[in-house]
Length: 165
Image 1 (cartoon, rainbow, N blue to C red):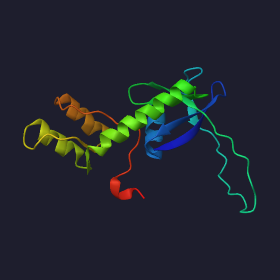
Image 2: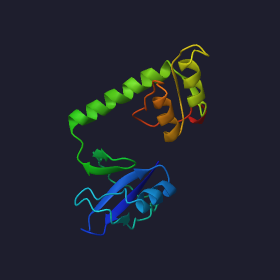
Image 3: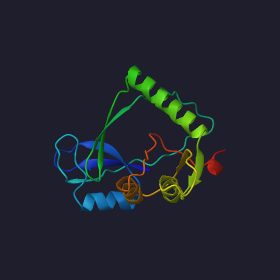
């Protein structure tokens, strides 16, 4: 996933949104799927972003935690995100969801890019049912759902077990 600062040319608003890739951003922009959360205009493009410049090793920087709440409105093929301060209740809910996901994954097997094949195999009785997680495309996930295969997207991104330090 990649985050871009976006700029609405209609009302000069700035906001950010997440995309699978730069190509995904371009596809959504070309199809008019990106909407300004303030005015609803589709005249949206990438905003200028400041580069991340490292500080000298001998400099101390005062850091304060940044709390954010992201509100996402999902359309057909796009999502528009807005940012506001994260409430304590929302923070507790996110921590609880992350803990539930961690517990579920402890009892599940990583199948990587074979997720769709494994899910179908279990659905059609060709292999033993068990808890699995992995990766698949949105198109493949939609096909699984149409076939009646019960799947769910994880609320938080997961790194493959072999990629974790």
